[in-house]
Amino acid sequence: MTALPPHSRPIRIHSLTDADAACAAAAELGIPLLLVSAPGAAASAGAGWFRAVAARAAARHPSVAMTAVLDCADRPGDALGALSAGIGAILFTGRLDVAERLADIATQRGARLLTALPEALDLRGARDPRRTCRNWLGGQDGGHVTE
Image 1 (cartoon, rainbow, N blue to C red):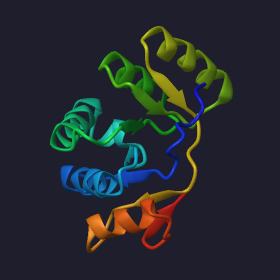
Image 2 (cartoon, rainbow, N blue to C red):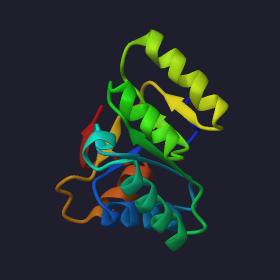
Image 3 (spheres, helix red, strand yellow):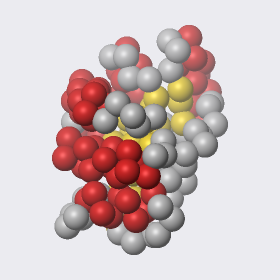
Image 4 (tube, rainbow, N blue to C red):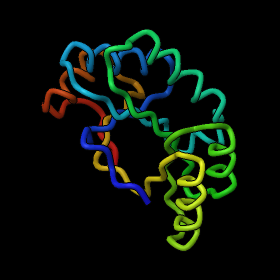
């Protein structure tokens, strides 16, 4: 399993608008970004949706070094589907023995598997997502935080 990237103030997104807000804030601050889908989004929104959202946000904010992670919850089938769809980083919170097998598959595909995240900012319901992201990334912990 892969260690967390050094920029470990993750932001959970629910839409392209959220992804854009997070990228814009990271660009303003000149820092890398750890963008994470909503919990279990591999099952609800799908890998294709997440890949498209991350790609559009990255294209709109090319100066941001972004790591985009699709949350597969504890569902190994969703994790395999995400890896098959070309997702470069996934979060899997299921059994350790399954995570170890998935990590091996991810490595073979040039992807990364995370099994945990530090405290994350969740943009669901944020009134001003860009400001909320800027505050969070700048070390001010305002906003909706999840673990």
